[in-house]
Image 1 (tube, rainbow, N blue to C red):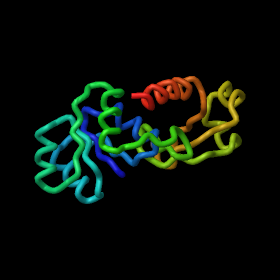
Image 2: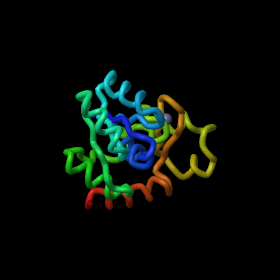
Image 3: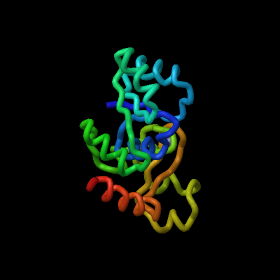
Length: 153
Ligand SMILES: [Zn+2]
């Protein structure tokens, strides 16, 4: 399942990427969202009933979300059969850009992360598209807590 999310769903889009779903985000124009969904076989995620109606009439797959909160939106997605896969690499995609993430050796990131981080961690990942480096630091641990909450909704 691949998605394209409307501009109101930035947080959800980042989380879907962390769960490994190919999720486009950042396209402002409804016509363009519809065109990309058609061309790439993506399910449209939207909170806009007008966009949902238009896309459905064109035979596209749409999930119209009601909730304002991440938890509520995940609950709705589960009702549509979207499962939360394993969080983080190697399954995850880059939350910033949707690119694939691969493990890298400590050596490879030596000059690219703060020296404190380099000394404290042995596990690193890099986004192949934007070059962002990830490691299991404080932010990562906070995400694990949110993940536990999302699995229970
Ligand atoms: Zn990236």
